Image 1 (cartoon, one colour):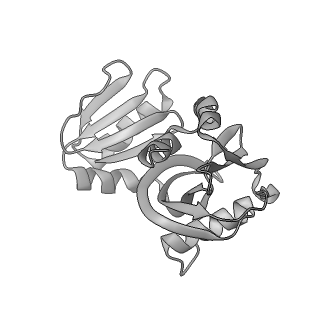
Image 2: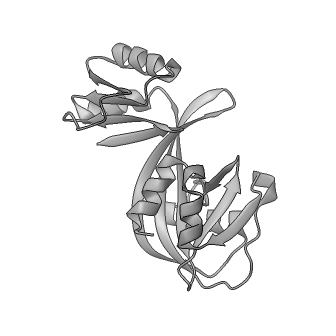
Length: 201
């Protein structure tokens, strides 16, 4: 199964039909590239639909769907300190996890560590677990893109206060306790809520 987030909405590609909320969900059977393109465009313009479920040949449908976008690989970290607090950044009116694009020659884990260091100004990071993958749609220079992000759990023993990377539009970089994360849950992107939940934070 593939799940792609577009803001608060999602596109799911699955071999089999899934149990989904009927209201706000459109289910289509994959038939051709042209039909899939048309259905996605209709979905993206609709204000009523929250989910688009595409059933059929999963790998073929994913290949076709992915071809509609510029494809970007990225990596990021779900980072906790010795107290169990979660490292988060604040930009574009949302609380986010540090992540960024892979550079030439980098492996996903190298990218994840570098991006956490750059965006939050912390060091002494150690990857403890390969967590999951997420996909989300965004616009860049008038192009519609899919970003595939590799997520890693990390531990940080740096006691210095995080410093937000201002040139990337990051206003805050802070350690949030579990209760603090719950308070801002609605200001966290749905794709990242899944990452946080997967880590049992």
